[in-house]
Image (cartoon, rainbow, N blue to C red; front, top):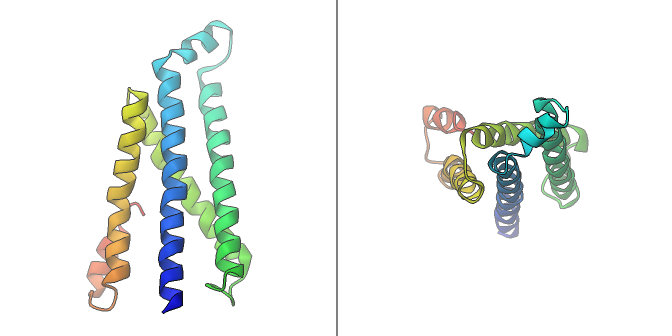
Length: 154
């Protein structure tokens, strides 16, 4: 019974770790647009893509830190004792890149910083809920239900 609670704690840590990083990066990028810092950088002679590349690098560093911590926690916490850390880390990096792509879509389409951070958490929660439902109802779901749930973002 202890392993079930441990897995639930890991899922909660995964959700809040990625959700806070997502909200922070979306808020930062939308604030950059809102305060017109891109235009100031263009007046100084920098390309428009420099702002996006800096945002990408900073956000990826935060997500990389979360991926390292979760990989080590899964390996040495006893949840995946027979797994190698490398493939688990690659899986976490892949998920981090998909979260970053999700943040990019939200940051490019939203115009207010505070609303962008709240909406990003809300959208992330909505796309995370099918995973929780599959985790709870795994034994009673049919194969096509599981395939349908996998088609969501998370």
